[in-house]
Length: 454
Image (tube, rainbow, N blue to C red; front, side, top):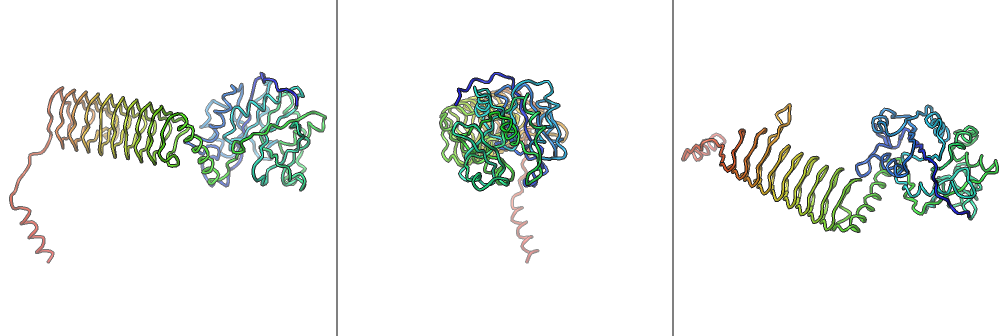
């Protein structure tokens, strides 16, 4: 085979996402269903972004409004209506790519895990010495099922592309299957598409036919075969979505451990697409990471904790059964214990809340201690208000801090207090009703109730 040369031409991507996704049985567009907290379409676009595409086009049909909202200005949306096959879908990008001179990658929004390295390999093959008109990404699954086949020689030059339903038994015996992904020069793509017919079992315009047309013209087309069939696995149902999530999580767990984190029961830990972990992090069983979590070195996360949008500095301990919500920022050696919820709150070095506490819209000073059952009353039914707790302050158990309120440094709030006014530095604040004592009252009450019941 001829030596591959680096691809230097500008790159455009066309991502097909016009299908109705009926097997998902969902009001949400299929390609917006999340894997690891990120829509599958965005996984694919993040990989493609590593190639710095000059233009990105997403082909929409059903659920166009959802795609427009999700994509914003990151891609141009072209509409396919009606849906007449994959070749017809790609044709809808012609206007969006007017004036573009470079290489075009055709991708699928429900095939989210194609790597940038694989895309790059396709582009490099497109620029090899034998000058292929198109490069197709192939794979060799354990069971070829209903996939279209790529008939190629030993050097990867394609002899024929055929859909499964149109293939002979001999052609179906070929193990190299068509992923549907393709790299074509813009100068060739739309001319070839215009010649695709629909004389086939489904009466549709198939994208692989551009390869057969180019071959009939005497041009070379080539296949690049990925070594990882999971890379091109499509997602068409909830079950396949769950399988994809499972594969992604398995790889991420392995990566976390390879990078120096300890996962006591890896199969029970669930990461988000952007979770960042430092070294010597210990994660106990049944921990869930939502998006936006950054964990520094030497952090311990005890079992059954849930984290999202949180930043944990070195030496932090949380859980078990802790919940960190967006905006939780924990400084060095902060301790968050069981059944503590932290939201939009910064806790400075050494502060701790060990039991049964809600801290929302607050700042907690270094070394402060938050007693069991304490809550910051941050919402008045209309607006959120802030609580500021000073350094080394001690908040007694079962206290309610009614925001906006400030507790000074070294201040003490007595257990059971409902504090609605600022507490000065070093002050003791006790806000309790006077205790009323009635000796013998309880005995009389019980006697009266027993008589009524009897």
